[in-house]
Image 1 (cartoon, one colour):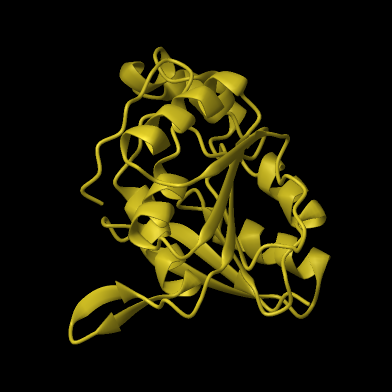
Image 2 (cartoon, rainbow, N blue to C red; image 1 turned 45 degrees about the vertical axis):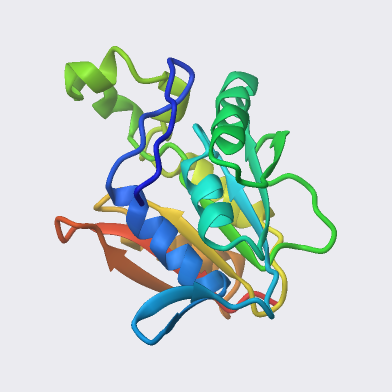
Length: 210
């Protein structure tokens, strides 16, 4: 997204695929195209919660490109939150941070919940490239036996305002897991899957919250 982020051992290095997540989130949260240029809609000030923020890439980008948004970012790791807070300050972005297991409590519920949680199956981690396996934090990689354990929990506890949306970054083979988790939460939820720059399933949009 043209922004420069500090990364350190407690956080995962941002990947190009996360730009797809951010672009879809900006579109959902009120960044409109006018005369071929992306411009924020000043009439709309959505509450956006970024779960599993890591270095803060998604949250800070949201606050940077859509300053009318109220952005709260959380992570289970206090060290990751410290890095994300540094990035927000360096880029002049207004983001509120919290150390929390999944979604922090807010009043009201957010209009948009964004999450980039660990989604690599535990058994695949030893086979990852050395630069990922040995230098990226295990906490940011390990998604449990099928890679979807944290997202399954998030679907059950997520609190989103009526008419709001959830956007999550997923593994290339996890679209059916998203649909199953959504249907278990509510038969009213609808799922749309978007590809990354390589054409692989990477971002899921879940709407129909009530």
